[in-house]
Length: 302
Image (cartoon, rainbow, N blue to C red; front, side):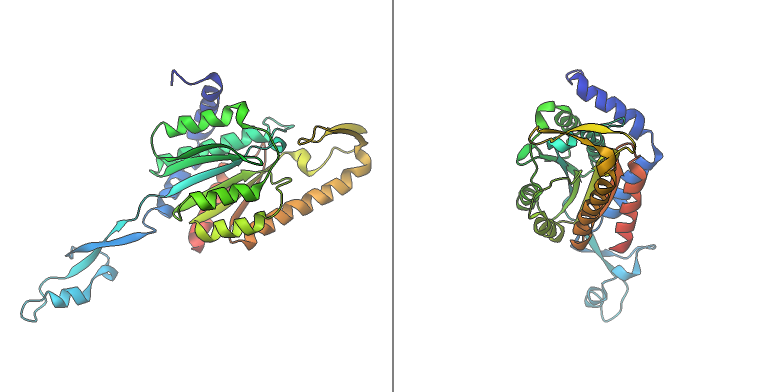
């Protein structure tokens, strides 16, 4: 803790205050255990039936086979052991469109907060957690680990300004994950999904087909969705090229809102049609309750 830089400590303090004291977060940790534990089981062997055992686990063939003189005096049940642990991978959009915000947090700050909370919950549940930050390339990668230092490692990467900025290629980031991670992976994708590039839908389908689960978490600032009314002229800057333009927002506000909602709906449909989950946030929203609700519904539907 003493060796951590001030920005990492600041994010940790915010997570301590805003997250760790929330009952919902601990519900999230418990939900991880309910959903992800015991999903994949390997047959381990047999043992004698004990009172309270699940009757569906009785191996009648083995019981009959082990009967002495045709008399069944001992009943045997199958014993299973869990498969290897789940890898929780948080894929974070680090492109320049995330370096924007008109509320309490930039989208990049909200994404860091959300990614840190997911990592904390995963590690508390005994799962391995990894982080991938992407723009039009892989900006930073922390391989999955369940070591206690992984949480601090992830936070340190998230607060480092050098890891943010650039254009955006979601397809390449998804391809990176599909090729690198095994099928016992749950992939969280945190992005504003603005200017994501081409071909991402096909890569998303591949990820959803391979991994245990995929959840898209769309983060938008309110000004990504609508412009202020009766505001006159505003100056806008392209986050990728740096070019600026001054326009009368009153003239374009209605059309902007329409197109923004259409684009958001297109992203949502892309996830749902790929059998992936989807949640949308405004930067100032509380994140825990929608995430818990989605995990509950996902578990009930499997």
